[in-house]
Image 1 (cartoon, rainbow, N blue to C red):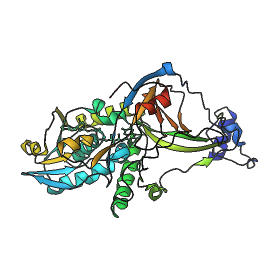
Image 2: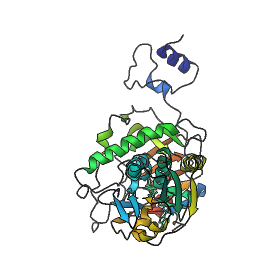
Image 3: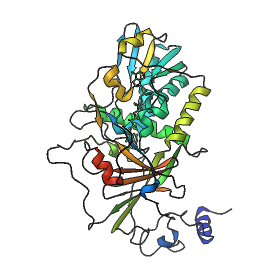
Image 4: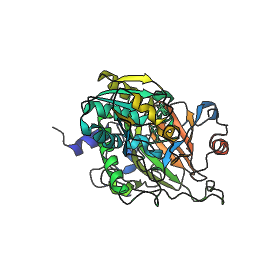
Length: 380
Ligand SMILES: Cc1cc2nc3c(=O)[nH]c(=O)nc-3n(C[C@H](O)[C@H](O)[C@H](O)COP(=O)(O)OP(=O)(O)OC[C@H]3O[C@@H](n4cnc5c(N)ncnc54)[C@H](O)[C@@H]3O)c2cc1C
C-alpha cells in the first residue's frame, strides 16, 4: 500500500509532473519536490488569424431585476416563466429549472410543455421528467441554433445576472439557491466520454507595463452589476499567486485558479440524448403571443424563450448585453484558459473561445471584434 505522499513523490519522480499539491515558497518542505519541478505543462496557443474559423455575435438575455421566475394563468393554462438569465444562463440553469419545476409540479400534472430548447428549456425539461411528468419541448430552434450555443461556456453564475440597485433584497438568497443546486448537478457530467463538463486551470496575467484595455466611452455610464460570488466561496476554488518563473508566461504576475467549463457541443448532445431517452418529445413550433400557449394540450407550461420573451411576452425588461466570440481551431493539448489585458481565452473541446472584454459591458460592436481579432464579425 502506498500512502498519498509517497505516491505523489513517486509519480513526480517517474516524470508525471503536475500531480502534486502546491508548495509556493522558495524552499519546499522536506520530502516534497520544489514547486518549479512540478509545474503543469503549459503548451502554446496557436493564436493566428488563419486559425479563426468563426466569429459569432450574440446577446445575453439580461433583466436588471434578475431572471423572471413567477407563474401566471393564461386562460386555463399555468405558465411558469424561466427566462432572463443574462450571462449566467448555463451556470444557473439547473437551479433555476428546479425552482420552475417545483412551481409547475405543484398540482402534479401528468404532462408538461416546455417552450424553448436552449440551456434553460432543456434543463427544465429534464428536471420535469425526473419529477414524474411526460414532457414535450416546443421550440422555434433546437439547441444548436439557439442563442445558448453561442455562449463562452464557463461557470459564471453571477455574470450580468442583475443590476445591484434593481435586484430586490431577496434576490441574493434566490441566486445562492440556484447556484448551489446547479454546481452540485454539474458533478454528474464530469468524467464522461466527450467531457461535456470539465475543470480546467485558468491563468490571470498582469503586467503593469502593458497598455490598458479600452475604456468605455465617457458618454456611457458603466452598469453596476450585482455580485454574489462571495456567497458560494465555500464551494468554489480560490486563486493563488504563482512564484516568478513557475509558468512560461512572461508577465510580471500570474494568478491561477481552477474553473468549471462546459463543452457546449458535447454537453448539448448529452442533454438532448438524456431527454429523448427518458421519453421526451420535441416539436418545432413558434408562438407569436403568450395567449397561444393556452391552445396546447398540456395545461402546465414552463416558458424558457430567453431573449425571445421580448416578443413572445411583450416583456421589454429583457435587454441585450454584449456578446461576441472569435473561435480558434481546437487544440486538445491546450488545457487551460487565460485572461490578459482585456482579452480572455477559454480552450474548449469544440473550439477555443477568444473574447475582448474591454470597453465596458454595453460596448459590443464590430470595432470590439476587430480589436480582438482583426476581423469583422461574419454572423449577425
Ligand atoms: C457571448 C455570450 C457568452 C455567454 N457566456 C456564458 C457563460 O460562459 N456561462 C453562462 O452560464 N452563460 C453564458 N452566457 C449566457 C447564456 O448563454 C444565456 O443566459 C442562456 O443561453 C440563455 O438560455 P435560454 O435557454 O434562456 O435562451 P436561448 O438559448 O435563447 O433559448 C431560447 C429558446 O426559446 C425558443 N424560442 C424563443 N422564442 C420563441 C417563440 N416565440 N416560440 C417558440 N420558441 C421560442 C428559441 O428557439 C430557443 O429554443 C453567454 C451568453 C452570450 C451571448
